[in-house]
Image 1 (spheres, one colour):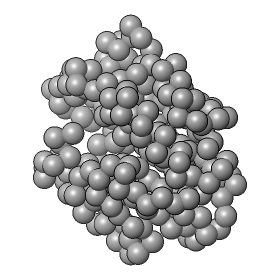
Image 2 (cartoon, rainbow, N blue to C red; image 1 turned 90 degrees about the vertical axis):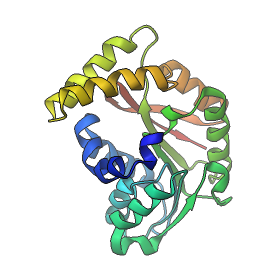
Image 3 (cartoon, one colour; image 1 turned 30 degrees about the horizontal axis):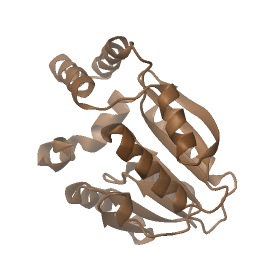
Image 4 (cartoon, rainbow, N blue to C red; image 1 turned 135 degrees about the vertical axis):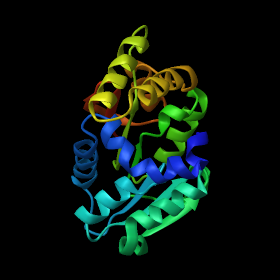
Amino acid sequence: MDSFSDPQAIARYAENPPRMVPGYADMQRMAGLLLAENAPDDAQMLVLGAGGGLELKVFAEAQLGWSFVGVDPSAAMLDLARRTLVELAVRAQLHEGLIDSAPEGPFDGATCILTLHFIERQERLRTLREVRRRLKPGAPFVTAHFSIPRGEVDLWMSRYAAFAISSGIERAQAEAARFGIAERLPILSPQEDEQLLREAGFTGISLFYVGFAFRGWVAYA
């Protein structure tokens, strides 16, 4: 998480996800569509890991009546979110901290994109339970992050690096990211990720996105 307090890393943040996450833009668009399936025109959405503002901008531009509550532990990344949103920022309340910093809601939906893989299993379960507690009954929750089958981390992280290199990331940078992520992040298997969603009380869990080492689900409170 140190990179989220590094000014140079923050300045590059908007450039990197599309080059390192296969289908990044379409994954965000699909997330917005899943949120919108049963949401009212004036929905209020909770965005956990909102720093940078990339998904906030996608959702806000697609749904002109929605408002947002964004939560992120990095003040610098929240500042970047404000700069990313520009005039759309008036529709987003941004809170520095973890899930406990979020208002009680209840919200019409929630997302947590490219964030949960930073969180250890037990804290991840607590976070998911706190998200669900803040949702209206039946409201959607969309999440996407690193999720790799047991015993296949080396294989999929090598493919992650190959994708980044093919997208223009310098080989040394991609390889450093590959080994750093595999060593530091508490990546779970898809089966474990789905089990955590069930343990947190979500139902109707469906896989909607797979991009090499990344997977995404929609589930319902």
